[in-house]
Image 1: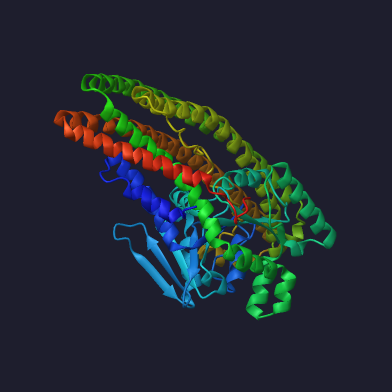
Image 2 (image 1 turned 90 degrees about the vertical axis):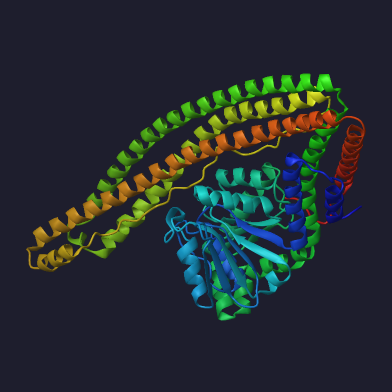
Length: 585
């Protein structure tokens, strides 16, 4: 069995005179070869927001370098590899491609400034990438760790980078936690990543919040859900506390590290996973090479068959295809119209949903303030109690709204995906039928998915210079009047916080709907354009070669036939290889 790298090299060398369509495919082949040459096993920390992914990676690194918090914190993926010292490099997406770098004590501050949601909301600083070098025994074994935003919590610019990173990952640490052990959103996400990533380690974080019986019940529940969905966990589940593990690493306490559960995870990462790095890379890249070589073979067959077609028939087929192109473009325009109608409908439904959430939030705020004793209205405890209660209310409310919007978007996506897939398949099949070859099925791509998750924003007391002066004077007022004013301020601050969260919900989901539909339309145009251009190019090239006649046609046809045969043989080699050494999730 030939190594993947050798097969990729042979595939490239078989194509001596690539046209534009084949050149694009060869660029993808070069990208695969670069991944193989790099030799790094890319391991992403994946999961829903607030599960503790960044804390887990900090515990593995032994330092609090990545931003942590109780609200969605990570806004951008951070790529972490071995280095001789700790340093960070941030590349900005501006006209100069500016770079911000730092070392030592500056690192955590720079990462927080550029990659956290709190200090770089919606990626206003226009960060293109964040990379971190850290001295680490784990990373020195050829492992790259990737800190990712939570499921659905990225923004449009960042989602592209996050999904590109996911598509290039070879393994993952899927981080769950005890509150609850696994949700339907996470199960759906797992269904997606297991098609892309051959090896997944499952972590049950925050296990220190559970007693022994509760931990056993959580593990049993998680195991049953994974089995029901036929999601394998060959390494089992790692119950641990990343928070306690980080503290143990900082204190140099080996016993506490063992008790936290982190030592067992580290052993798995530095043991079987690191040792099996080459096998896992082989499985990942072999699967991607199979799909790529199928597309390359289809393009080569288009060119070969076109060269064998007599001149008059070739021109007739070119005219038939161009007539078909006009009908394909018309159908694409109809699909775009359907998308516009769905966008309007989804936005109307969102408006009704946010109105409902706002009404319930005001009722909840009034109820909470009504429960506060008059004499306690001025205390910090009163504000903290309201903030905590509203946080719980909005966490449930935002989760329910996201679920409703996700369901409606998925229902719309199903119809649009069917129409788009049928159109692209028809375009490829039309080309294949004209030239009497078999067309590979179009790739399956996820569309209309949530890009952002709304998050809770706590109430903050408004305080200006005037407020401060008034506050000092208010201490001279009678107690009843002072308490009345304090209650009014508390009501105003609470309603502002509620309105801020409803606005956050509306903005996040409104952007989700718009971004997802635009991305779908763009992807449809690119995929349909690619399918049409590859056939146009094959027909045009054959017509030009036929104009030269004689030996030029025979030479080009012989070369094209050799490419088809070479790619067919290489595809068979790839498919025949056993997938051993890297258990699939």
